[in-house]
Length: 253
Image (cartoon, rainbow, N blue to C red; front, side):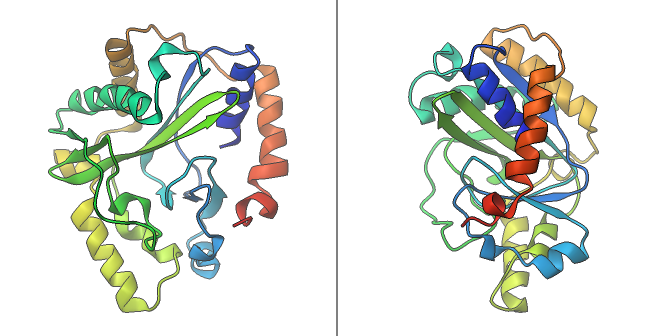
């Protein structure tokens, strides 16, 4: 999370180019949406699983980051491919995400209509698809969220590759155990992984290459592979220490 924000700051200053970042998480980490109550987290259960917790700058509900590919798209506000309204840029990027997963031979589609279901009382992000998110047979496959700042636009999202999606329920607060079990059941009914959809395991590297090729083809760009600059790395460390690893940010809501 700190690296994404550091890149955004540098892009806003004109010191870094628009960036597609692909990464994974070690150890597993629960991320909360920008305005999600920290009280949704059952810290005793979280620590028992040896998981971490962080708060995102983007909205939405909780996601357990493990066995997945995470992407972030970071660009200045005047970048044509993210121009327009939030939904317009969201849809433009969703077309690239759709192509990426289609190249893995998954029969995916974009959910173009807003859901009538309200997730306000639901701490789990992946249970309810939002507009322009990628689904398989009505089940959510890729969850994404976007934040717009004065420096530019940051959109990131999660593609679960394998594993038990209901693990997230082990680290969240529910009224009682039947409520936890019901949430797990609903999650399996409404979300899926690449392995479950395709019937085989897709490795992180294969998925990452699919993203790169699809973004280049769909958005008409040519990526140049690179690492964080020295300045970006320094700011990442500073943000991690002072913000993302600090209760004043993580527990602020």
